Image (cartoon, rainbow, N blue to C red; front, side, top):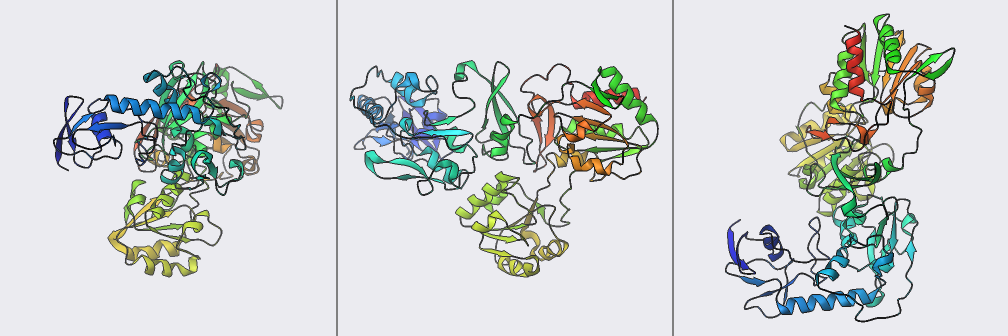
Length: 567
């Protein structure tokens, strides 16, 4: 890219060829108003708020779509541009019911901000508003058509970010309305509730059901952390007020997902109503009763010093905790392992990043269900398909990605996929624990053109593996078991423990907790601090968003205390 020199509002600006006037202005710190524009979406040029005057060019130009040129002179706040912006705003306020005092976004609305900026203090074109429907058929967020300005951000986000293509527009002109699929309730549609449309909406048209009226931007606290609902490790912006979780947003341009989240990362953890474990408990006379930390840790340490122990961890925790867990069982007569299975090592090819999916021209999904668990990977595959990549699915059962696939074959027909991929330039194999050895061997012949992405079910599998932990099950020979983590809360494990002395370190009450001999409370996802290793092998920061309840201690601190007691 070559440099382009232009003048914006009398300021000399150096831009890059291919940039728009808006991008050049923003890089120079010049604020050009926008409504339909969003940095995570393609420019559309429909709202006309970003119109600017370019010397020597007839009429006003949409700065979000107009490329820079050498020697260009731009005025962003000329009389003509300001007059048009005011007129556009007056029409937007007249089109639907934008009575700000009753809107949950009042104070944080981009439309309202523009009105204040250009001095609108009354409705220039009053009209009796038609009562438009409010769609509350989804659990996590609501669509209020009365607040919609038809900027199309939600439609573009659904198509470009998630590539789900649920949203579109019906009717024309003043009758235009956002719709889901063929105009059915959002809750009955193909919406995957990733929330991308909610996050890009500039007004109160899309409403977060949990955080509505919970506090304006000036009242809330933002904490950047890493999602640990699966192994991808998306970056989160967690919004809180008064020690209450309000909402979770993605962070645009962050690694590895670029700000795209799924329902598991954005919504579900905020609605977890399971009963917490908030104090240590020790079994006395057949009943679990609360105890102090010193007593509980003393009982556990005494058990670990005698007999044979086995530690089984779920890796939905930090690297520091997993490392301490491994070290603890290096001090006793026993072994430590993981409860979750790990995707097998391919043994050849190059490990891919998430972004490699978007660059591939042929993608193979084998033994994996990304749209059921690592959903962001599935959405990236959808985006790749939109960009022309060919998709093949190898499975002996149903797979949701088959809807976008060029071919879906059984494991016995793997050779068909190999032949189809032979002419591709870059092939990405996405697989999980279901990968069969025949498929694993067959793809070797693709050579250097093959990259792979292994999707292990464990949320911090790479961090666990780095800590020396491998998949294991109760061995039946241990005299005591130490089970750590949310995924360990599986009542089916009780049958495999053979009545041995059991310690459970967990966040929530469960049948496994209720059957334990000692229970050690653990923090939940927004109370943890440390690091995790994501699907790409990057070590990411996990920040504490809210304090732990009194009586709960960090997992790693508890394990370190046990190590000290064993010295």
